[in-house]
Length: 235
Image 1 (spheres, rainbow, N blue to C red):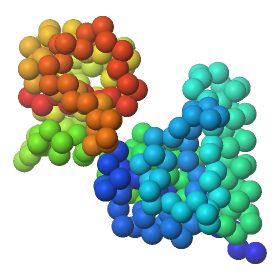
Image 2 (cartoon, rainbow, N blue to C red; image 1 turned 120 degrees about the horizontal axis):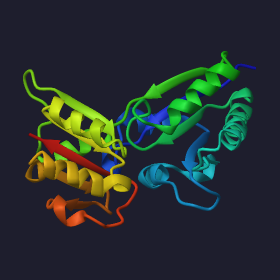
Image 3 (tube, rainbow, N blue to C red; image 1 turned 30 degrees about the horizontal axis):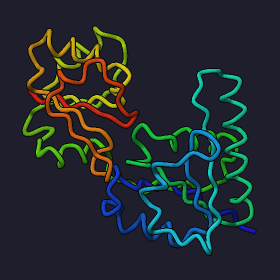
């Protein structure tokens, strides 16, 4: 029996209408829909985006738990179990559509799934279906060109490395900082130091029904923001 194909399907940043025609077709044709969730029983953002396009009556919905921990032993155990669950369906000749918010090849859970599957089961065919990322979504939402002509744009995960964040701002015309919520106070301090506070915007769950746009970034200091929050700084 031929093995199934593993698809990484990008379902966009939040608005269900931003799902591509190809992503819709792959979800419709795949008998197994896999989706990430942080813990058992929790909702999946990717699944919420794609839900209206999935007929659960003829699908196996495979919720995969990805632990939020840095413990290498736990991560290795859980990831191996997750890959085994997916491979079990593929070995039965069934295609699996692994849905992920944004694009599967940009800071996505699917990247590690793909690499580990290739390592453990190199015979499996893996196909990535590109999706609209939150980076593209926020540019359109704000009406803010990310780059034009010879300008430089960077997409960077926000961290507590103050000097690295500072250099990113100094060296690029536009920077999109992902997952900025956990270091929002530090980022505001750096922006203030570089006199760039008025050049920054923050958006939570861009393009979704829960979207929040924060035009006055200074007001966010000390606030507890949603995980899916990004910052755009355009000089």
